[in-house]
Length: 121
Length: 109
Image 1 (cartoon, rainbow over the protein chains, first blue to last red):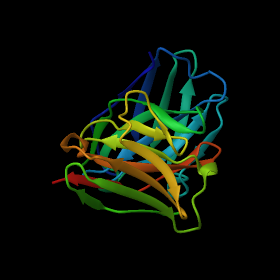
Image 2 (image 1 turned 180 degrees about the vertical axis):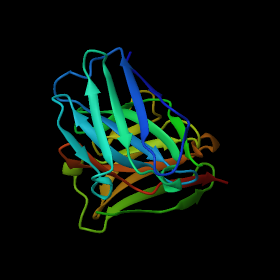
Image 3 (image 1 turned 60 degrees about the vertical axis):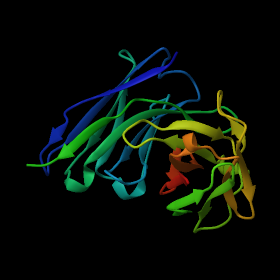
Image 4 (image 1 turned 60 degrees about the horizontal axis):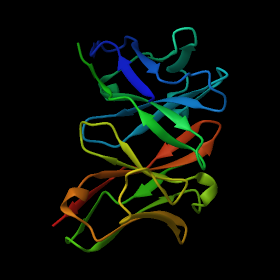
């Protein structure tokens, strides 16, 4: 059974870098045809897609975050990562990693439990 | 691209309620592979509908997905108190890019 687990600091200072890891078990991030994504949810608000990394390593980011967000992967560890620079309080929220799978189209068929990140001095 | 979704809807127990998601840039079609997620605040979302109208395993058949006019729709027929959740729609925009709706709080009362 596929399992995704987010990890990283729960508190980040303004202007610093938010870095999170998604550890994947029960499946390979190198499996052809799959995307792996980061999604966040500010307190009391909706879900926001941040970006995806394809099994090949190519990436796609939300346009409004271009230049601040980087998603990368370590296939040897079966992990993928989120880096978000120059954070502000607006970046506070629960961050989820998820698999964007291709069953009858594309959908997030597996999610991590989420990790709360607070941006505060 | 902005997704329009009702912030909240209410339904009586046993009644029918529809949540819709549209695009400010045009019509929704099956090629956007609309999917729907159910979420309790503080917990990870759960997929209930994918590929426009396919129910995920274990999802009751009172949940259905469709395209209605130019929008994607999630309908609960015979709503129950246990269906009170936030519901989020997602459209696939290509190359691993997706867009979320703002979420709809469904209240059964």
